[in-house]
Amino acid sequence: MTRIKKLLDSMYAKLFTPGDIVTATGLPRYEVLAALHVFEELGIIELVISKGNYKVYRLTKLGEKLYKALEISESPVLDVELGEVPQGGTQEHDVATVSS
Image (cartoon, rainbow, N blue to C red):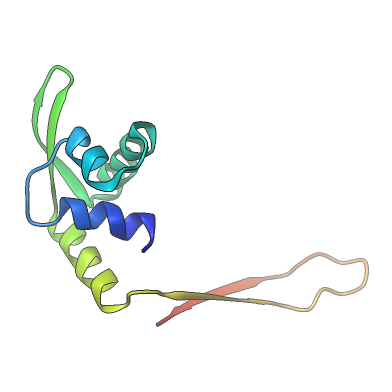
């Protein structure tokens, strides 16, 4: 199970605090706090209550869609195709695709 999936599993269908996520996932607090910051910036979670250092979050509709998409595709595969590099040249393009 990926860390993102593990985090979303612990957040789905409930209000949560960073401490709740640390307890549920067993991940270090600094990792959980960093993930929550990124998730909030991406619109995956939203702040519901903030009193001093006490914060309560929930998944947004986008977060729920991401969770459900990861449920369907348990282990996405990342394929990377690199274009040919001419001798003495540089890489012209990278193409990454995700398939299930």
